[in-house]
Image: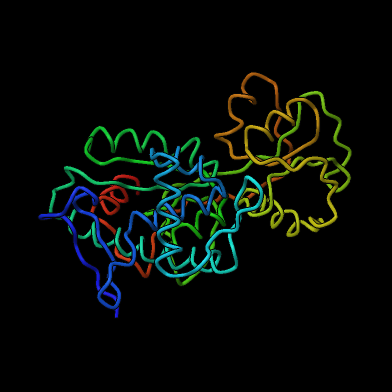
Length: 313
């Protein structure tokens, strides 16, 4: 049997007030802090980097991992030379630890709903176009109105954003591609359109034979471009992809240098079109929506509800 035991009132110095210990069979087995430390080490595969990210000493991080392993008579990491690597059990435990922490976050968020948005935390994830261009002004306006809500933003590709929301690693997501899953709901937030662009002096004989500069697999921009090319009778799988780059800015810079052609959101290329570094090619690409990604199976905090109301038309 596992009990969640609050530690706060009358807790000793060994535990931060407000922490929660998980009690199993009458003994204190683990704390949420130990789970957070485990995940930080697991994600970085490095004790020192995890300690730095958590603002803890390396000895505190090592002690937390050792306590978990010794208390349960398991090995979560293999020590390989001066490095570490997750064991098979450690890799399996990552999902369990994330689930417990996500549930604890949900419980804290539920209690925070009574605070009138005077305090709280909101974890946002967004794909590149949305996160770099559309979302920051909205975040700034929301922060001005609710300064007690701490906002964080991670930039991922569309697939990774949806996974982060579904797995409880983020409260809300924003993407520029339509992805379907029972784990989350997509809400139209804004309209965007893509442009096919090349360097001003580029000689483009035909699109099938042109050299293409692409975002990585999983990018919403790339998915929409490939669908449009296939619909026009071109074979997106047979394109001459010269470079595959991880950001809109890197793709734009390569195209401006004459490396090939690409499709990007108008918000990414407007300035380059205006000053003549890029030209738009005569190929119509469909308009698309920016979507908010809201979890379906988890509680959404009051701060997340307020942010959605602020961001959506």
